Length: 455
Image (cartoon, rainbow, N blue to C red; front, side, top):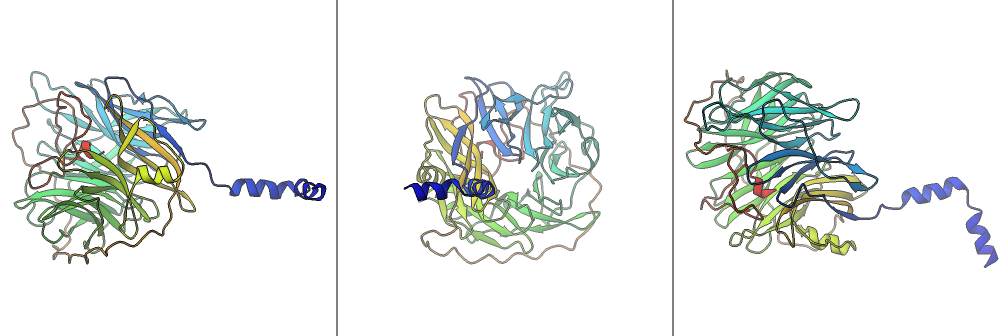
């Protein structure tokens, strides 16, 4: 015994330090503190410093908020400053280093009951505080304009703008020196469109647009002065596709596509537009909302089309589906008082360890709350499952052309005003496939952009 004890205590301090740093961090679960008993919180992303961005709703208002990580715990949400005269807004994107947050703010229109939003970029200053800048719109009139994604440096941003919202790309220098243009859409585009996400270098963007056959998805590749569009393929048996995100390296796009059985989680090759269907749970529909930085895991939501109950899920690179609750339980972590319903962020920490961000439902109140599941080990091997169907061949693409002059179609704006949940990606039946835990008074609709209830 004495000899063994001597051996233990005689190890060099450097060796002991190395052994300590090699130990994996413990898996921990953090429900994000609520904005209030009458509010519904949504976590949409997390920066590398632990800052989580999102927004907080009540029946008549919505605010962009941040949760900060301090001493391995999350502080209560702090509202981002809004531009003068605005009546609320949302945070829809946070950069990888949390230096930038972007979204929109709602401005009233004197004597009118119109929806009117402006694109907002929040930039973090030297002292850590964020300041808001209003960026230009495609026209100066009343419109539904918002930023929904950006590149790492904040020099490219994407979203939608215009009285009848169309996809928009902002180019410039943070925090406020930007120009905006509407990228070219594939043949057959009519009506609204929106750009939703951007790769880390800004070279690839993804979004959706309307056609006579319904909603389609597009990937844009930067050619220098313009983005060239490519239609993303539909799955066999379906006529619609709803992309949600693009990978950090721009190689993959992901979201959902329609089949005869409803919406199915889908990954596209961004270079060719070919589609691959992922697994889902039983009779559930599902959509992918986020891709890990190493492209090894995908996160999103499975939805029961009958009850609209949601399940937070992950997919491995082979397309197999895993419930977040099951993975957390296997890691020895309980999720007291919360049912995770979506995954909006999958962040690779190191060596097969990931941090998961999403939104769930509080068991007692039924309110939506954000959560962070830190340091979850995800094995790359799993039991075999049926092979996914072969990729769908992409359709021929139009020749690249420069971005046209932004002249969005003018239509009569919606008659129901205000700021509320963004809806998108509805199935052909018209059912909203992710209706969960909302206020009894239906929030007001802003139009195009990610469907809030998928978060």
